[in-house]
Picture 1 (cartoon, rainbow, N blue to C red):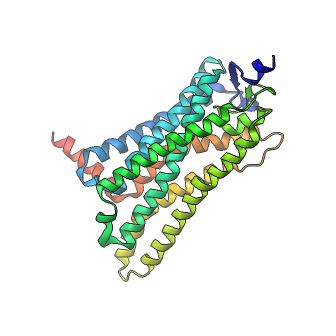
Picture 2 (tube, rainbow, N blue to C red; picture 1 turned 45 degrees about the vertical axis):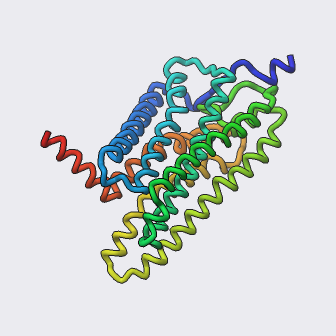
Amino acid sequence: MKNQSSVPIVFQLLPFSDRSDSPALALSLLTIIYLLGLLLNVLIVTLIFLDKQLHAPMYLFLCNLAVMDTCFTSTIIPKLLHILSSGNHKVSFRQCFTQVYFFFMFVGIEDLLLFTMAYDRYVAICKPLHYHSILSKKVCAVYIVTIWLYAAVNSVFITSLAMKMSFCNSTTIHQFYCDAKALTKISCAGREIFYLVIYSESFLFGLCPFLCSLTSYVKILQVIFHIRSEDGRRKAFSTCSSHLIVIALYYSSAASAYLLPSYKNSDFLDQVFMLLYTTVSPMLNPLIYSLRNKEVKTAVMRLLQLKHKT
């Protein structure tokens, strides 16, 4: 019996269990948010692929961010929609930890991509004469491949540790997906090592990239303030503003989701903040870049004019 309970066959996901009065409304809203985010990210990828003037390092990284956001939300939301529509809350052990694996993989990719994009802006503004030599196509390709490979391998390590936890307290996860934080709440052994690894990973590949991104933008602002032309300052800052908003949105939602202290009735708030982190933030990223980036808006107009002529 101990062996059976420590390695459960199925888990029970309880999304928004305390406020489940109108699942149809939640299903409709989540479907709209998911499809809108999917559409916007696919449009960003398509636009960058079709418009040759966007074949620059910054937009190559943005294209990867859009692909990652699409995969990230697709790892979580379709299963949640299935639960809300069917009422079947069961998820197998294999399905649960497959979700854990892809979650950590895409989180790792986003952390490193956002830092790489900040570094791209630093080189473009602070070292413009050396931009194409520092960030050549070959170097950018190496960066992207390294980021995806590292995140995939690193997620194997984290997921394998999560699978070693024993779940003899309960098999009910008070979350809308197999979240590591929610899993540790129902584990009875093995979570101490898992906590240690997660804290180390959060520092090395979460906090450090964030601080490096902030350092890049501090140096960028120093250069911008020394530009004599007001138009030059405006143009330099406009290339960074959208990425700054995306960084602020991503890290604020992540901090709200994971740094919220646990207390008796915190399950619902945990799920709300996690929903903002995993669904709303990836949906807003392409919207922010398309509305605040002049080159993206110009590319959209060129594409629309080309279709109109044909």
